[in-house]
Length: 361
Ligand SMILES: *Cc1c(COP(=O)(O)O)cnc(C)c1O
Image (cartoon, rainbow, N blue to C red; front, side, top):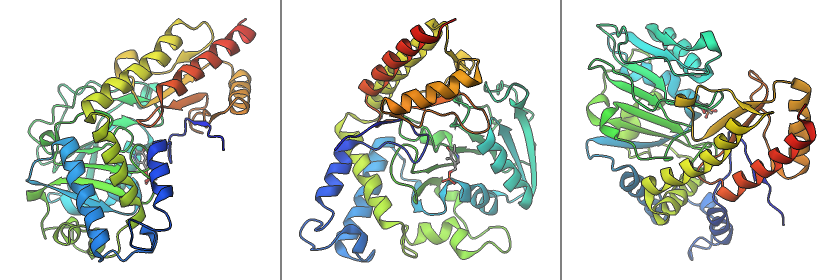
């Protein structure tokens, strides 16, 4: 068996220990004689799995009691619709455009009401986070929406926007559980699991209890109401059972490693190895304004498209997978989520240094 260093933006690398544990439990989950995949979501064994997943997540993020935790399906993209359907009571919402995912959410929001783009970094290919200290927040806005870590462009909000008292909604898909978060600052947080916490197919929503009401936009399907899932503790219908089980294992792995503060420290150390190299390099260059750099997604270029393509090809041959940048930006991108070991980043930097020696003009 040989595993590569997988720098994919998502679905992405998972902790090897978690995968091994899942493999060991594959055929007979703790004496049940079946795999979790084959198990009723109403069974006692599964009830323990989903309850433990929720309670471990609550521990990790210190989620207050007045917030619901929901395990849903439909990916992060479905939340682009569920958020306005459930929260757009005045039919007005403000969006900050920091990349493709924020833009998609904004476009979806505009189907249901008046979506305002109140700030944007489109003018410089989303390479920075706009100044959010004095935003023109709409008086009747139901919420202000951000994509907190921009997976494609490699930017991250290091200070949350001043929403002037309005509800903050955040897509945390690609930074979820990478650092401690003060949940009370948000009305709603959502995250697709496949970036930092588990397999694709599960999306996690953390929503303040008072926002979970029957008062949704007319025509909102039962399955797209937060209340449906909150009332049934994520078991209204068959949830993504195996995905939740895997997320639960990742939560336990995070707890065993010291929780989110320890994870943040580790992630900072990893990112620093790569950013320090990029800052000193004569060939490679990071594409993001320094103060807005993500710890999770690191885009970089050589400035020469052919050389970029050669780098992607040669790095792949050397066991570094998925370093090609997103099709809309080109260049390279290394996603270094929680489960990427520091060793993977060190080896990548060694490889980049060798490549630089050969190709520097
Ligand atoms: C990947 C990603 C999405 C889309 O996720 P899906 O689960 O494919 O819908 C949305 N937002 C962010 C920040 C992402 O990284």
